[in-house]
Structure formats: C-alpha cells, structure tokens
Length: 167
Image 1 (spheres, rainbow, N blue to C red):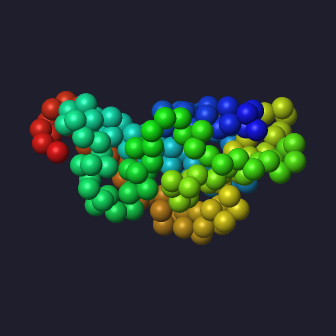
Image 2 (cartoon, helix red, strand yellow):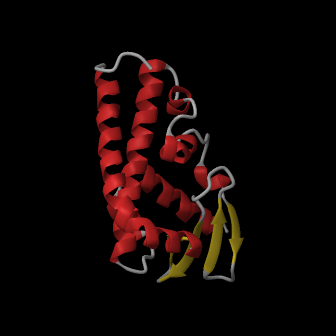
C-alpha cells in the first residue's frame, strides 16, 4: 500500500504542476480520447492551483474564500485546492490483489482513481464509472474546459501582476 501511496503522491504532484508528460507516463488510458481529457483536466487543475496561490499571496485569502461558494462547476477544484497537507495521505487505498488498487478521496467527488501495476510501476486511471461519464461528456466539455483553463490562467496572471487589486 505504501508503494501505491508514493506513486499516487508523484501523480498528484505532477497533476497540480501541470506536467502532462509526467501524468501521461503515470496513467493508463483506454484510448487517445482519455489522454486528451486528462491533459485538459491537468491544465485546468494547474490553473486553479495557480489562482489559489495568487489569491493567498496578494489578498491573504484562498480562492475558496474569495469565491465564497460561487465557483459553479469549478467548485470541486476550488475546494480541493484547499486540502491541507499531502493529498496522497487523504486517499483510502484498497488493494485488489498485488496488481490493482482503488483510491478513494472522501473530500472531493470525482477524485477517485483506480491503479494497476504494469511493468513494475503503478499506473492511474479514473474509475470505470468516471471513465464512462467522461467518454459521453467529453465532446461537449473539452472546448469549454480548455477555455476555462485559459481564462483562469489569465485571471491568475492579473492577480499576480497586481492588475486585479481587490478580492
């Protein structure tokens, strides 16, 4: 279980830092569509975490405090950007033999993952239910998520530069 948690820690760190190459190397995708969805999701996560850091640095308030529950479809990411400590420690891990595991995070719906060990390393993927939902919604969601990511990055840059002066 410690090996899964350590791999999850690296995966989550790469996700928060927007390192799509590292996330891709630590993921198991059913097809190219899943990879593209992951890359857009990672970019969005990076943007939200950047804006959270900018809000804390400039306003002394977290993004969750600034948004005050009004982040709409991004509320889950705003909330998870506030998880303290090491995310990997917050997952409940259930081993399914030596080569598979389920990782569940009570603090955020949709953050659950499954993992399989292939070639000596742990690879992560969404749960079967989440993968099915994303496959159905992806054609509609991809352009919207890309636009949201770019907009959040722009707001973060404006907060960082001082162009936005009030929370």
